[in-house]
Amino acid sequence: MITILGKTEISNIQPPFRNFGAFTHLIKGCLGAGILAMPKAFSHSGWVFGTVATLVTGICTTYCINMLIWSLVAEMKRNRLPLMTYSEACESAFNSGPKYAKKTSRCAKHSADVFLCIQLLGICAVYVLFAASNVQEILEYYGYHINFRYCIVAIWPVLILMSLIKTLKFLAPMSLVANILIILGMLIIYYNFFETMHSLDERPMIQKDWIRIPLFFGIVVFSLEGIGVVVSIENAMQNSRALIHGPCVLNVAMAIVTIMYLFTGFFGFLRYGNESDDNVSKNLPFNM
Image (cartoon, rainbow, N blue to C red; front, top):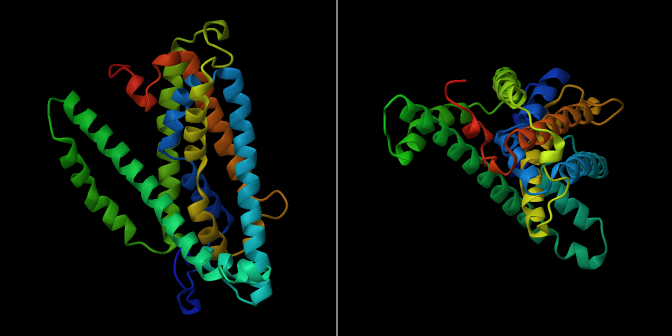
């Protein structure tokens, strides 16, 4: 069941899926267009600072997601409910606190919904612009000059059709296909990285212009952001304990994602340096 916003409806519980389905959803939820901006992020930080900061950010993000799930489980046990949404868990947590917190529980619930909507709308807008810009660039290469707005409209039918699938179990195969395509695309980009590699001495270890450091963290945090799907995945898993217990699905998925982001940022920065584009695929030659 997808429980991001709104009241939990026990009668609409989704068919559960297994650990591998949860793993593919987590990878797809955290591994998106942001990975192509990692070389640009490293250009704002330097390769030493960027490497350390990316690892620390990945660890902090994983820890925060774990804390969110553990808190959600605690609130479900306290209220004796099988499922809870973000906003319901937030309201319940405030109601369990001191008197001044209880008075703001309804406000906290609505605030969680508002901020989650803003975050998800922002991410979806970035992905639409990313897809449309790539479609436009390919069409222009073949001699078709089309307005960027028309490219955005052209991809709407595909997005709308995919949005009609509300069950995560049935979306798992699409996530798997998407992950395979992402990996194939990244292998092509990595091939270009290693084709002409610059030495570490040619790139700054730490960016001297510290005003650019916040830009680095903005890109990395945006890239690693997958919090919007975690609770939905946990609620729809056949064995939800596997998400956060033992050598859990969540930690393994986040470790793979963090390593891929670090690898892309590090070697992309060595290859292109300060010339790295916000979308590193635009640095690639068409005739490679």
